Image (spheres, rainbow, N blue to C red):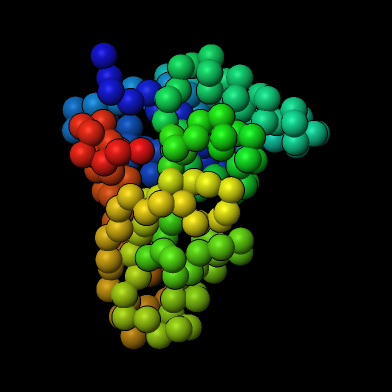
Length: 199
């Protein structure tokens, strides 16, 4: 029986989801993908779910106008599919405290910078990489952390550094960081599965 039963929440292409699914298929990660949820009906991650034969759901304000309705739907689907670890992978909505509390200590996120630097409410996507470049940093990277009620403030589980070069554009830096994300996320999950990281 797999050590982890994973649920994925993503808003766009879900490349980090795919890297984790690939690690599971290669038996590098002892986990079962249970369900994929997106707030974006056109997100390619929902197509990935079909390809991989994973149950998937679109949960957004279009279908569930009230926050409480959305929370209930998310919790219901996570429980229905026996998810015990929630993996945020480019999920562009802040999870409510109700959902976080329901799965307390079992919600992970990946951030494209070395937290606590360049985290917070508006720090996502290219804005993060632009801020790193503007500050003339020589290092950036990726951070896997637990999710709490404050943006990017949860306990850090793993970090990996990538260099920042003087001629980097945000897009070039983003690609370099994403390549690291695709490794560090599933490796962190595997350490959790093996009990090497306690959550």
